[in-house]
Length: 211
Image (cartoon, rainbow, N blue to C red; front, side, top):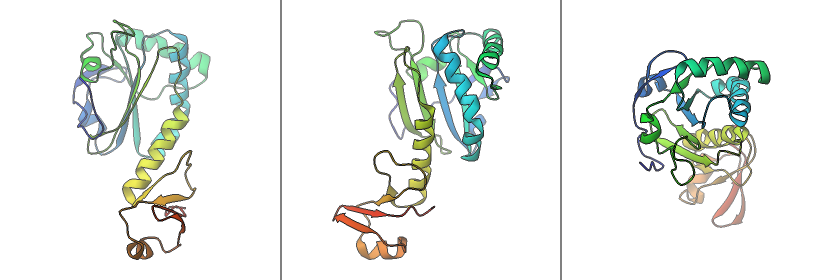
C-alpha cells in the first residue's frame, strides 16, 4: 500500500510494550509519529530509540505522541529496551509495536522487497489529530534518522496550520517566515501587523507570528 500526504492513516490493533492499542484511539486528539526499525538488537536502531527517548519531552510539549515498530515480538522488545536504556542512558517512555505478522508493515508499506524481503525499512509517518498523514520519510537500514529534523518539520506544520505562512529553507522555530502567495497585500496588512519585506511579488518575508 502506498500512503500519500493527506491520506487517512490506516487504523489497526496491535500489541505493544505498553499493552494492546487501537491506533486511532491511542492517537486521540494529539499528533503522532509512527516510526519503524528493521529489527531488535541492532546497533543503529538502538541509537535511534535512545534519541527518541531523549527528545520525548520536546515531543510532549508539541502534543506529539511517538510509537515505534518492528517485526519482532513484545518479549524481544522488552529485553531490547534494557539494552537501549543501558547504552543510551535514556528511559524508553513510549510504546513499541510488535508486528511479527507484518500486518502494520503491510498497511503502511514498510517492507520494500527490493531492499529487504523480511525487515522493515526506516520509515517515519507524522500524523495529525485528524488522523491524516502529513509527512513520510524513508531511510535505508544503514542510515540513522535525524530526529531534530523531524521536530523542525513538526514546528513548521503546526505553525503553518495556524497562520497563512510557509517556512523557508532550513527554517527554525522563531525565525522569519514567508507569506503564502494566496494572501493579497491588503489582507496581509490585517494578518501580519509586524509588516513584511517584499523580495519579489511572490516572496514576502515576515517575522514569525508566534515569535
